[in-house]
Amino acid sequence: MDPLPPRGLLIVWWSGTGGSEALARAAFSGASLARATPVRMLAAPDAGPGDLAAAAGLLIVTPEMLGSMAGRMKDLFDRCYYPLLEKLAGRPCALIVCAGSDGTGAVRQIERILTGWRMRRVDAPMIVITGAQTPEAIAAPKQIGTEPLSRAFALGQALAEGIAMGVW
Image (cartoon, rainbow, N blue to C red; front, side, top):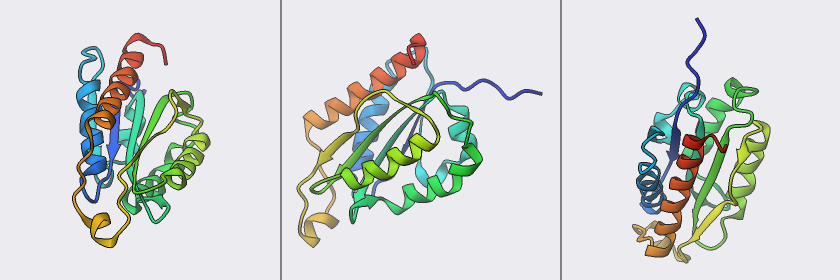
């Protein structure tokens, strides 16, 4: 029996201090407005190859830690990369990175994986800078401002609407 065709948008996230989770929830809220597109949100440790393969599109939301993607997000890619090779080509994807000062290291790493999967990036990566630079600020719970949350909401909505309309 053939597997079911991919449906909906999957938002995969990880957060250590709440910033990435807040952005993922904002994107989920926006995506949920696209009633014709089912939307799921899974923490990276709870997602696996079957979850990614079942989704018509993917939004990845992660913090940058030490100039790289978060370890829990890397673990997801370590578990999923080879099982999904050749299976996600052409599917739409987008990326949100929450970082203290830069974010480009995590973006580079994840974009290489998405390129290997031959996914279709539908927007430039969204990088949200928190400005956390001291050990105390880095470890503290993050409060994300209205403007980045609005951008995440709009990105989630656009990605889900595009899937529903067959644009992607």
